[in-house]
Length: 470
Image 1 (cartoon, rainbow, N blue to C red):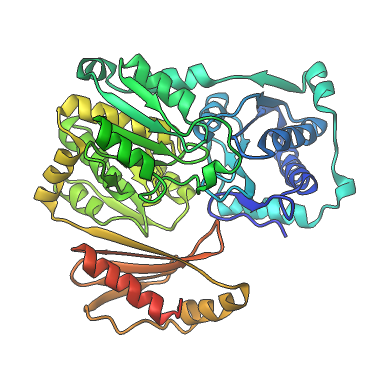
Image 2 (tube, one colour):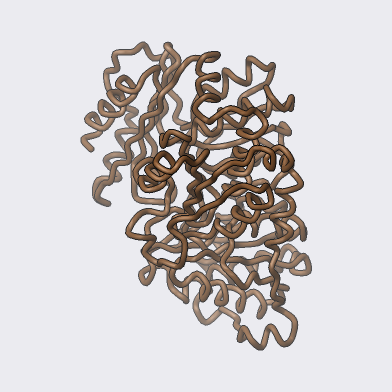
């Protein structure tokens, strides 16, 4: 069964991610496009640096072209945000990127986007799944890629310059030029380097890059920017005097930041830095949208500036939808994805990184100094995380315990309320919280807790793990 999660369809290469299944997804989507008379709006497809991504993009394009859908094919690896950007610019009803984002190297997948270049919601992904269930391999229509190029049903495009120019036009390049910053980029063997380096060099930054080049195993690490995976970036930033270290995940829609001291800046802190900067220093207005596992400090910053904060389920499609409904200024999640009003309606690690460089340049303050300023105003909060693996045979029992029986540990903190909108989230009266939920992209149970200090947050996570016997 081909099932879409919170970040598209992801599967093991050679088991579920196969040529036949990629073509089934493409045929299902082609059927939907033609049913909705949206073929003339075109379809943008791109791919990342993963094993088979370039080939799978061609398999996908061959099916769409055979079904009368005009395909704009990006013929080089690019960040997922570039696909979303171009699809928005062309007003495509649908588009896609071949990527498994930050998943391990033995995964690949497909992210599907809808009109406006934003993540497909459950309504669309369920339509695709329903179409797939009715298809046989013999139902798939095909045309050879080269033949489609010749007859014009597939065209080659490269929107890199348009995307880079849009970022350059959106940020304060003059302030960046005056700051003379040193920046170290770690694309984690992914696709961020070209776009991000171009933006920063235009700002006269001194830019160096590590972990570049094609490496299907991602150097033996998860292509997910975290304190653990960015250990080399942390060391080099501190040792060699860089102003900021920027890590991006495999398809460059998420980021991880290292400050001038070599400290990992948690994605929650990236969000509060940017939201505070936009409100306090740039004087912008607007609410914030965060998912259910993201810091509540955003709520305090919003309230202090007379703005609202919205909590939504995990999955960036929920963030972009709520941002559109309230014309929100910023939306993001604790896994490192965020976007800003006026840019694309999905995560973009390239744009977010560029805006952080602008923040340092405009304020004249180091990252650590900006965080100290924020914590001095709103108090400190620490987020602890725990990813728990489980056997397939354990999932039903875990699900019943969490969602059906609604069992919870005997916490030492008074409980204000419990939400089961997405996982089980316990809100404590002291302002802290803990959540346990199944990942929508990997076979994991994820536990997050935010409390006033690190030991307390970690103890709450440990208590939840012990209660669930994980």
